[in-house]
Amino acid sequence: MKIATKSLLSALIAAIINARIGVYSTIPQRRERRYRRILEKHDRKGELRASVLGIDSIDFRHKERQHSLSEIVQSYGFTDERAFYRALTSKIHEELRLRGWTAKRIQRFETMQLQRVA
Image 1 (cartoon, helix red, strand yellow):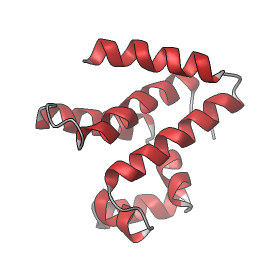
Image 2 (cartoon, rainbow, N blue to C red):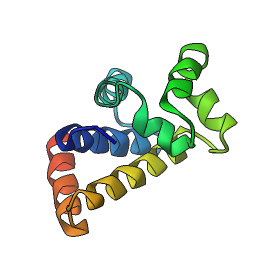
Image 3 (cartoon, rainbow, N blue to C red):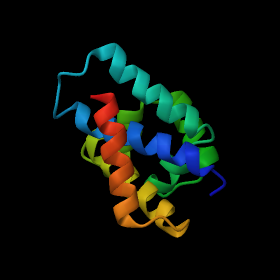
């Protein structure tokens, strides 16, 4: 993947928050949209999201124009968007490990950033 590490880290935080939105409904709706936009901004070409679904990024972008994310996610076997975001989080963790990040370093980064957001 040709996504910068800094963008991957921002996408990671956005994916974690999006995965938690259904569980912790204390996040206002405008904030929920903000985190989805952050994820879309850092994954402009849809490479990360498409890789989780197992399709090409071009196909993902075409489907995204025609259908909502929840429809796309369910058509590829995920139960809901939360499950998709959890898988996306795992994919980003895997990518960061390939770039030399340790699990402890990733966890420390997540903890720091999520404390700032909360």
